[in-house]
Image (cartoon, rainbow, N blue to C red):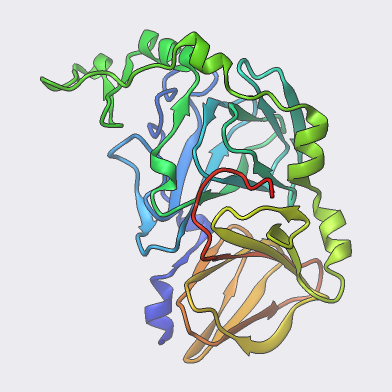
Length: 321
């Protein structure tokens, strides 16, 4: 593969194209400044304005959310995995029917494999614009977002209506649902109240891992962060490893399906049969299946990257085996 061909599979942080109308809460005060990025796959955006950088199926989706301080993402749920790692800023993740069942504060490098089937939200509590990177299970990311009923009600008050087709319509722009198309049904109160509300001990203990702890574990070999044998034991249809300076190797290797490299600290030189490039934090690189490649730090200093590859497990609910 030539460098020019590979360039089409690399999304640079500075070239990310945001969508500010991706979801039903895009006009709701407190959530109306967030930016959504779909990097690999179709994502879960409800807006036709969403730009998709790489459409090649990987068995999972890669996205990102960028938000200024005090901006939040409203309570929602997914049918497949939703994994976040913090690229920049300080973030509060919260969960529960009303968002008050528990919370955790996360900083750069920290990772959160949010249990499926619970309402969750997040907000930037730092002092600058922050970015979190997301991995969503399945090529269709579980078919979309399940919103808490109050989110849909608040959005309607600010002009946005979600159709049963999953498309947003802005009544303030004169848009209306097409004939024969109904609004997306809201969960009933009984349905919404039936969503689990795990304790902070259950969620933080089972599904959150801190960056510096993982760096210590990955002293001489990459640490499997999420996987059947990972420090977060799960089978969401993909595995996530953390590679550090001490655990990186220039030995070429390959996978039988596309894999993704996402630096979180430092600069990384990626070499493959046909060329090489350097990745920086926030860059995303899709490596084709069966292509020999290697990644090592290209400069001195702290260096770590997340590596994601699909497995043969079907995308679905958080594994509890």
